[in-house]
Image (cartoon, rainbow, N blue to C red; front, side):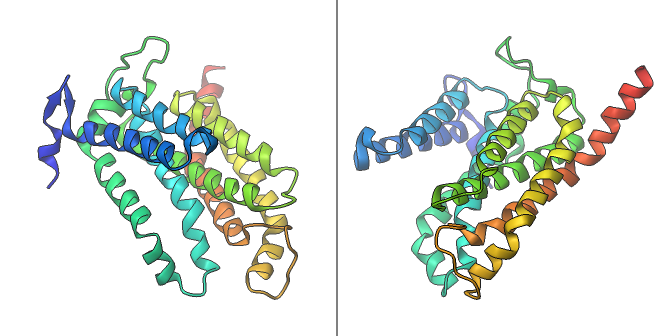
Amino acid sequence: MLRHLDRPLLAGRTARELLLVGGALTVTIAQLARSGLSGNVGNLVVYLAFAAALWLRFYAARALLVGLVVAAMAQVLPQLRAHHAPLLMLAAHKGLVLAWVGGLLLLCSRDLVARYDRAPSRHRPFPNFWAAVDPRDARWLRGCGYALAACIGASVSIWRLSAAPPAWLLPVIVALSVAVALLCLGRAVVLVVLPLMSLVVVLLFASVVGVAEAQLSSRYYAWGLIGAPAHVLPAMIAAAAAGLLALPYSLRVLSRARARG
């Protein structure tokens, strides 16, 4: 249905790519017009970085942008669990929901996978090791990355909305972000540590999920203890999913290392 968007239009870029770059720039301009540089500068940097990465055809740009959409969804959708009228909340965020759906429809195309994920890197310092990975394995591991993105998104919401977030939460966000970066760069070492890292994250969230769920159901109230209680269980599930998706490849990497040794 969207194949006509895969024809090159400008400087070798397809209509699909131009829509994505234009969308990132439009969001940047809209935020600048709304709040200027006094707003969230970090978001502006992210939008511009993704626009540049797409234009330069950095091989990981497409997968990273899908992960960004997943992280954004993980920040908002868990709120449905706490809302008295979930459908009304979705209707209030219809613009955001349409942006997610439209973004994923544009990003999840075979043409973009061929032009980015499966193509040789255009940037010598960042070789694309993913181009040599079996397509099925690559899809599976991208799923692992998206699960990590969901966990990061939910964790960021908890951290930002809690008056006194758990001391371990920010290190978890940083560690998972580093894991995503290493995964994008094709570093096999991250697959070795990811199942164990995910298990640790699951256990950390498990230590507060009971309080969060009780707080969510109004059986227990503690202002500021968990600022986003609806996000704790989804974050824990996402961390568990990432670990399970990485486990077969972790065992494979360890087996190959043992055989070479």
